[in-house]
Image 1 (cartoon, rainbow, N blue to C red):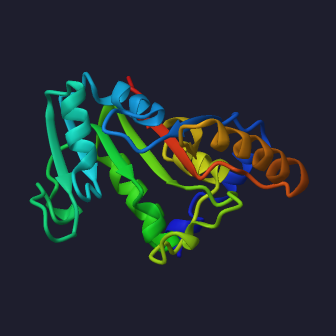
Image 2: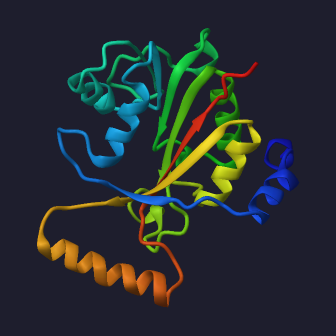
Length: 217
């Protein structure tokens, strides 16, 4: 349990001050980059080396290659059916300009998830970025309702504070799963009003943290 509580009061002190605003971005299933994926691409487009932790079906690698990324793109996953650069974090023996950790944390118990973030942050070069995406614990639609393998959820302020305590510069966003069409937009406006004004919850499905290691002295 040491990893969970090691910087507990430091995080509480950060949260007692003004927490940054987490603006909303859209994600829509498409062969092209969605609004939130375009933000990720801004981080990697000039990177020499990227690690995709939890690369899954390699969808993000294909998207970023199509968008023009030409640097080194390493992958890590324990799943079967694809060829990955690494099968374990213990095999990683170099540092990266950008590390992607998309839709991974929610599959791990809290202690394992925080330990993973700590280890990934240590693999960043000075000035490197860690990109984390995970379901939003404050969303009215509980993440376990669409995937029974989700075991822990994070809220944006707590995840922001934990990454700040790793001495990273952090900006965050909330992500809405979006579909085209006037009908969806109308339902979204009504649902947004009910969820936020009457229930005091959030309508954004995911949260994203963009954490950067300072260049240092």
